[in-house]
Image (cartoon, rainbow, N blue to C red; front, side):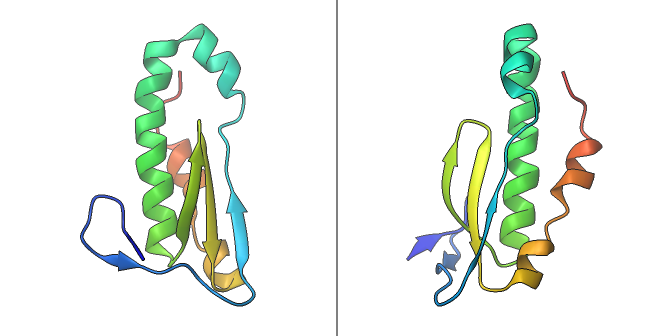
Length: 94
């Protein structure tokens, strides 16, 4: 068993047939090259938005890599719940 990020709430991975979600920031390599300080700040905002969206819909983050998240959900409907694209689009981008 793991705990929700920044909380003392136990989170169990889904079992049986699960739905996976994989994320990545579009053009992140170019953005890191052009504006590393701004990208670092933007990624912190991105990570908070995406993690909150995943965990808020019952998802289980099983890996992160660079700017991407790998998550599992117990149902397709719960995986479709995170609307991080809309939330992230409100955040300033470098």
